[in-house]
Each structure stands twice: as C-alpha cells, then as structure tokens.
Length: 421
Ligand SMILES: C[S@@+](CC[C@H](N)C(=O)[O-])C[C@H]1O[C@@H](n2cnc3c(N)ncnc32)[C@H](O)[C@@H]1O
Image (spheres, rainbow, N blue to C red):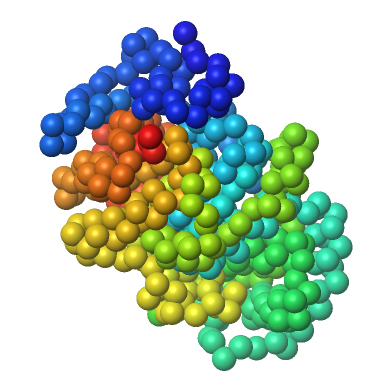
C-alpha cells in the first residue's frame, strides 16, 4: 500500500525503511527493480537499479532550458522533491549550477536555497523565479540605446560581427550601469541571464558565429582556427531580437499554477555564492531535502568554460577559478566532500534527506556511490540506499565531460542519506 503523503509528513521520525518505501510508492517488490546488497564495515546498504524516471515521462518545464556543463535533468530533483517534501518545506542545492534543483523545487511550491561558488550560477537561477512577461521585456529592451561605435579593449572579432559586437557592448554597459546604481530590477536581471546564455553557440539563435555549445567557451585563438577551417566569418546577429526569441521559448509552457508558485516562493528564495563546505548563513536543522551533484576531478573546468560569460557579467573568472573545487585525485575530492557533508548534516532538519548524485567515471572504473556512502555516514547520516537510474538514452549525453552512451544508457547514481534520530 502506498503511504499517503500527509501521513508521511506528519511522521517526522519516519524510519529509513519508510523513506525507501516512500521513494518507490511502497511497491519496491513490484517495480521490477534489481536490488544489490553492499557491505560497508558490517552495515548492509541496498542498491536499487531501474528506470525511475524518463525524460518523456512528464515534460519538464521550458524554464529549465539554460545550458550549463554537467547539469542534471529536472526529472531527477523532481523525483525526490515530489516524494519527500511538502509545499513550503525547504529544498537546497549546495552546487546548484544552472539551478535545476531550485527551479524545479520552486515550480512545485517548495521554498528554496541555492548555492554555488560560481556567481554566474545565481545570474542564471534567480531571474527564473521572477519571470517577467514577454511584453515587459520587449518594452525594456526597446529602450536600451545601442551605440554603433561601442568598442572594447578585448578583441572579440573572431566571435562577432562588428555590429553585433557593438550591440553586445551597449547591452553590457547598460546592465553594468543599472547594477552599479542599484537600479537593476527583475526585468534587467532576466535580460542579463538570457543575453549571457546567447553569447556563443552553434546555431543562428546565438550572437556568435558557429562555435562550441554555449556552456563551453572557446579561446580566442581556437576560435580563429575554427573560423579558418570552416571558412566562416561572423555574420550580423540581432541581439535584441535573439534575446526576445529565447525569452519566448523559456516562457512557452509555464502554467498559471506554476506562475503562482514562483511568485509565492521567489520572494523568499535565497542564493549564496559560498564554498559548499562553509555556508554559515544557512540555519541549523533548516533544510528538509538537498538534491545535488558535486564537481568531480578535473574533467570539467567551470571557470574556464565560462570566461566569455564572466566577461559579459564583469566577473573575474580567474578569481572564481581559485574558489571552485577542481581536484585531480580521489583523496582530495573525498576530503572536500567530507567538509560538505559535515555542513549538510548541520543544516538538514531531523528526518531530512540528502540525495547526492554522482556521475559515472567509467574510464577509472570508479564507483563514486561507493566512495560517497562512508563519507555521509561519517558525517552522522544514515545511508538509506543507492538508486541507480538507468535510462535508455535518446541522444548522446555528456556528463563530467565523458561520453556516457557506451551501453546505450544514461546512468545517474544517487546516494540517499537520512538524518534519522
Ligand atoms: C555538477 S555541477 C552542478 C550542476 C547542477 N546540478 C545543474 O543541474 O546545473 C557542479 C557545480 O559545483 C560548483 N562548484 C565547484 N566547486 C564548488 C565549491 N567548492 N563550492 C560550491 N560550488 C562549487 C561549480 O561551479 C558547478 O556549478
């Protein structure tokens, strides 16, 4: 029998066993999952393998469609938020990236806290909790003056047509002025987010000539090389028109119910740019659910990938790089994650849950879920189990910079921890 959500919410001391039943709607035996038993120093941990969600199952909101390296699909946080929290409870992500967890949680009416040491993360996430109307954005963008002679000390001619570059520079100047005078509002922040997302890419929906996907900026030198080999020259792209086009696409399927939820939650949402292991401003025992996926080893260099986006937002990417966890060994990574888990234990409410997603590092034959289990236990959590979501892939996915389609599946390994009393 499935456990009714209210009974679960009232039962603040629900056991770890209940938690697993809740995740599988009380039907573990009937779901066709395969179950393995792992032994950690005499403690038995179950690993559930199956297809828990599919990308088609329920269409994700268009509001998520901002590219970011190593982001997870909205269906992943939704699986846990739906089953383990009630509207109004706090959902958190210490490594929020493009903000998949906070956005999904807000769409479901949960209160949210998001953190990422990269300030661009906040630039991408916060505006989507306060989406302005297309008309408001069109009116604002129309008022922004374009200086046709605007120029920069940075040579960007390998990416942009001269007219496009002048439009980008004018927009950048306008946004910087608004921020400096503390006049930046939700509409400006939205325009900033969309423009940042449109800076580079490989279709004519972006400001640049053909280059890498928008979440991986090419160096100026390499872009010149691409231009030579493809015999291409940047063509004119209308910056204002492209910002409006992407806005329309982001807003295309938000329901009235979701709009209301965003309006309720948006004002209370908190976004931090701290190290995930030091988030002093989050109160003890205040978070019901954390859904997150950490950085791993040096396969993705978030700061370098974002140099152009950082430039547009006047963020010093070299300084940000120094604050991000980029590690070369599993020992250093384990040490960094131990600090994060201590912090998660402090802020998690009694009976709260942490769902910690780790990718698959096949090359190294490393099962990161098995590395994470003892780290969480040492911080004080009980490990409720490991979920391995094996999804038949529909297109090539790239997680942790490693092609993830060898077996025709897309795998998420999620370790679930419970702060039980
Ligand atoms: C795997 S990504 C998270 C992606 C996210 N789940 C999403 O859907 O977009 C890891 C994130 O950790 C951030 N990060 C790296 N080191 C950090 C640290 N020490 N503290 C906080 N965030 C950090 C990176 O900037 C990156 O955005």
